Length: 196
Image 1 (cartoon, one colour):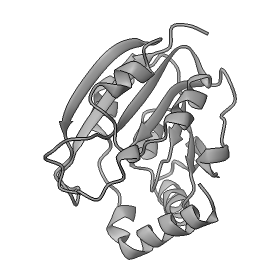
Image 2 (tube, rainbow, N blue to C red):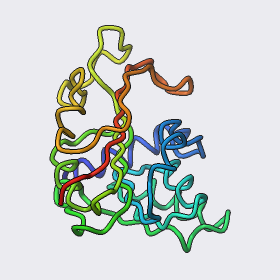
Image 3 (cartoon, rainbow, N blue to C red):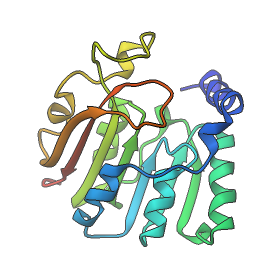
């Protein structure tokens, strides 16, 4: 990303403030949080923090990273309002230049965003036995948002390939949530790191 990308994301939140409103967390995160043995999490491209908040409510200490200052400010304010600010550490970062510290986290999450290089760099941030959850959009002929850049969409089964060295706990392809602006197909993987 770049300054241009940062401005783009901040502008997107200003233009569509509904994206900053509290939302329900990922159903996949809810369903598989119990597979995680520890309580230290990294939420990549966290946005306004719907998943960060859920993790903090469930006892996790969360490093929440994003390039959009307006989204992180919203997350900080909401976390303070509901008494979770001590469990959440927001970091304004350009993910293009971000490599999390190795062997640090029990859970890494990337939702509604795709950067294959970031995923590969973040794999090293997990402890052995740690869980990586990726849930984001994929290629599908029924997708309503037809102008999506193909590089931002997963190919069918692509997450299985990306996590081929992990133990795959869960994989699915499904239609996105009802509150989303466009109907899009998504792909999710819950994978456990089994090698250092």
